[in-house]
Length: 349
Figure 1 (tube, rainbow, N blue to C red):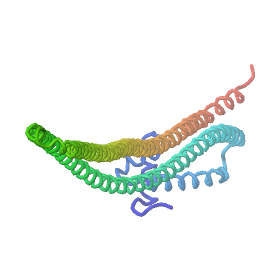
Figure 2: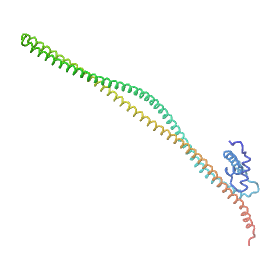
Figure 3: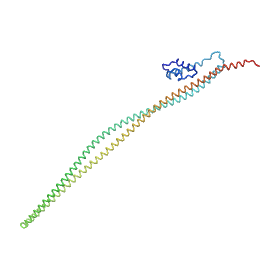
Figure 4: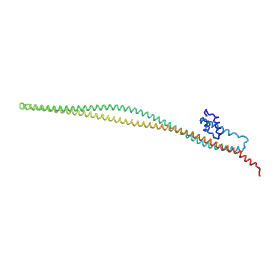
């Protein structure tokens, strides 16, 4: 349906002006004469003008025109119509194929756009899951760091306790050595005193020899007992140090395991960050492909419109050229008939 603005009478006047100066009417030329108007409106009025012209061509010729002229004009007009119809059919088939191709391309582009939107939605959902997983990993990493700090404190406390035990062991060894020296010195002094007393009393108390030997045996037993007690305490201290060393080793292994787990979590976090970066790049590439498809679709639609306009103009020009040739032949036909009639009226020699 024609739009408001340019009226049918305006288009008809423009066509009359083009025909008056010998130009073949077309949508572009009509618009050039009018200086305004949309191509759709002008095309609708132009199509109506052609339809009315086709209907007027079926009107019988005026009386007085020779039958030969009418017959020849009818033959020429039929021939022109057949050529025009064949040409128009060819152009219409070609145009229909191009329109079908353009529609198929448009459908493909729409499908690609829909697929791209689905992929974009899926990628966005996947990205949201990854972000949630990253938040959870960050919380786990924070908890791991807190636990690692706690194990570090325990390890430092264990080191401090081991150092204290080593110092206590060293002090105990020093005390035991001091006691041993003191006891040895005391025993030596006591033995010397006993030997002096024995020497003094040997002459006077030979009967006390047995008692002195018993005292010496008791002193030796006491010394042996003290040495055994010292060795037992030293063994207990060494076992305590060994136990603490084993606990420290276990804690160090646990701390090392925690460090390895923290490194693995950091590596997984780095891999997931790289995956997110790759997904963002794919999303940008898909968005760019979608924009390129839209631009290509618009370009194809414009090319189709330009091709259809060119086809209409070419068909109109060929048809008008053919009509002009027919009009020229019709104009020359009366002269030819007059010439033949004059030759027929000449007297025979």
